[in-house]
Every structure is written in C-alpha cells, then in structure tokens.
Amino acid sequence: MSQDAVREALATVDDPEIHRPITELGMVKSVEIGVDGAVAVTVYLTVSGCPMRDTITANVTEAVARVQGVTSVHVFLDVMSDEQRRELATALRGGTAEREVPFAQPGSLTRVYAVASGKGGVGKSSVTVNLAAAMAADGLKVGVVDADIYGHSIPRMLGVDGKPTQVEDMIMPPSANGVKVISIGMFTAGNAPVVWRGPMLHRSLQQFLADVFWGDLDVLLMDLPPGTGDIAISVSQLVPNSEILVVTTPQQAAAEVAERAGAIAVQTHQKIVGVVENMSGLPCPHCDEMVDVFGTGGGEKVAESLTRITGTHVPVLGSIPIDVRLREGGDEGRPIVLTAPESPAGSALRAIAGKLGGRQRGLAGMSLGITPSNRI
Image (cartoon, rainbow, N blue to C red; front, side, top):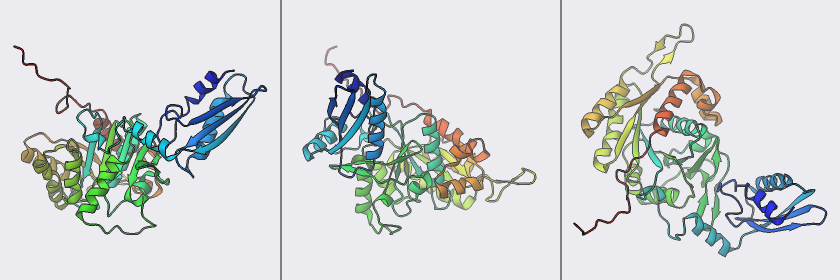
C-alpha cells in the first residue's frame, strides 16, 4: 500500500455538491499511513458546518477501505481558509474571478428553456419539475431555476429539502432526483412572501444564474412567473439564447392568454421551442373515455397563432391528460415520471422530455474563434 494508491482511491470520491473529485478541488489536506495499515485522511470542508460532512466522511471511508492492505480508515475534517475558498471559487469559474452568466456565453452548449404561461393555474411548474426529473433519469445533467419569485414552488414539488451552501460569493445548489435546484424559497423564512419590485427581481435572477455553481449542465429549465412581466424581460436580457416553452390548457380563454406570453418572443428575439397542452382531458375511471373537462384545441390554437406571429413553425410537443397522481406527486415531492412513468400523464411528459433533451445545439449563433484573413 502506498500514498499513490490511497490518493487514487480518493480521486474516485466526488464532492456531493460540486460533483468533482475532492482531490481535484484541493480538499485533501493530508494522508497518513501507519505501519499496521491504518490510514488517516484529513479532508477540507468548503465551509464550517457543511451539510454534507457526513456524506463526505462515509464516501472517503468507503473508497479508502477498498485499497488493498488497508486495515482501518479514520477521517478527520478541517475547514478551508478564506484564501483557499477564493481559489476554489476562481477555479470553478474556469480561472476567472468575475461573475458572468455561463449560459449566455457564445460557447455554451447548455440548452436553456424558459417555461412560460399566460396565466397561473395551468400546471407550468408541474410540467417543469417532471420534465427536469425525466431528463435527469435519462442521464442528462439538469438544473432548474425557480424564477417564479412570488409563487415559488419548485423545491417542494421536486422533493428538495436541502439548503444552498455558500463558498465565498459562489452558491452550491442542493439537488433531488438528480436535478440541481435554486429558488428564492431557500432564502426566506418559512412561507414568508417576497415583496420586491422590478430591479430586485432582475438582480435575484442574475444571482441565480451567475453566482450559483451549476457545473456543466446539458439542460437548464427556468420556471417563469405567469404573464409577460419583469422576469420574462430579464431572462431575455441575461440569457438571450434561451428558448421559450409555452404551457397552456385546452380552454380557449387560457389559450388566448398563453398566446400573449409566447408572442413576447418577437420583441425579445427568442425562439419558441414549442407548446405543451396540460390537463387535456380526464380519462373516465369506468370506461377510459376521455372527458374534455377544459375543452379541446387550446394547444393547437396557441401553436398555430404563434407560428403565424413569429413566421416560424411552432409545434405542439405533447398533450398531458389529467391525473390525480400528478398532483399528488407535486405535493409529496415525487414526480409522476419517476413514480408512475408508464401512466398516460407520465408517458406524455417523458415523451416531451425526450424531444427537448434530445435536441442538439448547432453552430448557429456560436463564436467559432475564427478571425477573417486579409489575404485573397
């Protein structure tokens, strides 16, 4: 047994919040090996009182115990100095100390979807949560920004009960079901309301995007508040390459309002990736015949109208039937795509997630790092 063998084992241990090896993050302070095969490992925590201290201790113990010749493992914990935390934050930002929105950079390959609706009550947050969980279950690295500052509900619906950890001016988001999440509800006491105006809303969204360490995401979903207010405008400014996903119900009144939410893309120069029709009928428990509780055709109407307004084809990505388990899953933090993936609602949501998660970004709009030559 050697130091190298122990450190190779430690390299297999990821920080639970940053999801990178602790050796790469400079978290291994020391490794001491006794003549009897006893190994003592001292690990730096990023902050005092780190909520993941027990997880780190258990993972380090398990990894080192597998090294041949090790008879016992003792893990000791220390805390990084301010200078070490600053160096870590800079390293996580790719060597740059200043804050920037990574998803707005020309070379970003993260697909950003802003989930919008014209009015509340159409199930926009339920759709967001289940799409995120389905994509994560398919192996994608997914994050969710709960941008509905006044009506935040994503943490509960996704089953997130952890709190963010701050490393200098960088925030490590908690996760559940393989999805990283940030929400203003994680920073407020109890169920206290958020009473903010435009500039504060913009700043909070900017912090969620720039100050949170998201890592290398495949997909970022942003659950927007209903309507076409400050947050929708801020999203277009902070992440101009984001695409809008419109959620509506079959009801014509809801569809008309949803059209306005989608039509903002013309002014913000964003692309509308598609329309999702939620609550599209209730399967009769006796005969399985679909009962049109909220009418029919709302999704198609919105898609046709937005196609006409934008001049580009806007598809209906899917229709989700009413299912009590979808509501129950939101209350319990257990998305239906995970608990009942073969149900009609679960299948519809997984199909939509497959369409969005499987899309590849092209080179259009990306910087290729090529400088035109003056030669002829």
